[in-house]
Image (tube, rainbow, N blue to C red):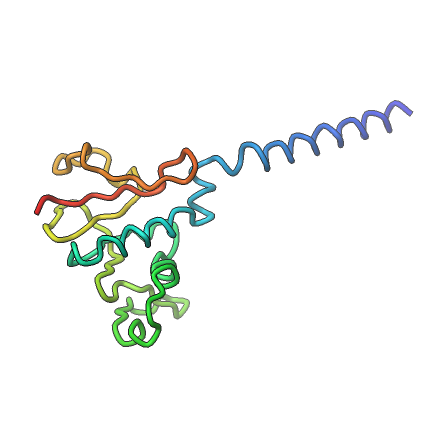
Length: 155
């Protein structure tokens, strides 16, 4: 009898803890928001707004393939993309990565920022970079988490 009550109580406790974590803690962690690809819609809006201002948009691919979100949210014509896309050589599984198309460059490197390029990465990409004025960083957030940092070198 006591064993059954203990098992029911344990089940109830762990069930409560699981749902509490799932609804009230898990969605608010940066790693979760990035895994759910949060912030790409806002990023596409930023690019669309600033499209004529820059020659290139250098975007990180750290948590996936952002090109698909840029295509979707900017309503980029598929026939144009297919003509312009530059892909990496296929890996051992036969898959290539999109390196660039149009003004989008997905080989992120902010070590030597160039004029005319907007650099879009995660906050940790910009840590300890002496050549970047952190006060000029723009931020895209999802809830309270900072998803992307945007650096625009001086013109």
